[in-house]
Length: 230
Image 1 (cartoon, rainbow, N blue to C red):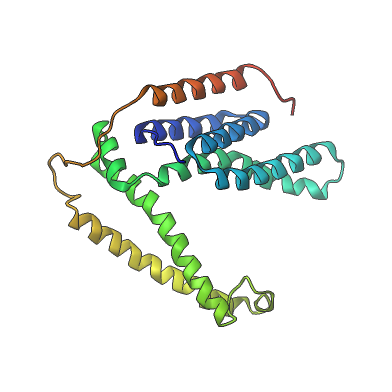
Image 2 (tube, rainbow, N blue to C red):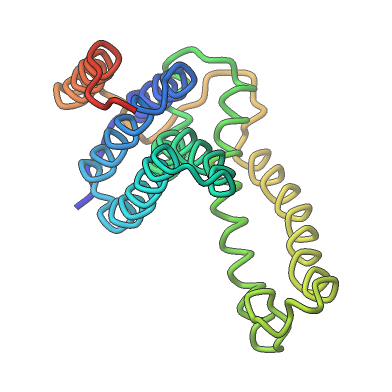
């Protein structure tokens, strides 16, 4: 069962995580990924936590192997490990924030007195990427039925045709989705200059505050003590 965490707390943790990954070394990045995995489990995203655990574990093992080996050609993969470990914690935090209903998210952000343009940008961005993923899945399904998907090995020798039949429709849908999201925002009165009302109640609980305290304490520990010698 997914636990409901106040969107303001989720947004705060996302900002803190984004700052920490910029300041962290590789040993701290590994532990920040662990904290993000624990956060996924606490929030009830068990399947995603399992998938990301496999990815992070494989990336970490590959990184330690790259550090220990003398083979220069495999060290090229070190940059890939760096990217996965650097962006992994932020992506996992943002994935949880995506599940918050847009109305609830905007009501929470509005209570923080944030600029309306920022709130709209955040809401549209978090809504945009899941829609694009669903559109891409639909396009790929029809492309596979016609034998034109880039996931089919026989199309690897015809990259231009695969690109035309999969990516071009996605780009066209992206342009249309942008217009649809704008029209939906206008219909809901997003451009109204006054204070918007909401059916969602934003209230901090002791559990939300405990999550913040544990996260900050965990961050202080991993930046103070060298638990991993990388």
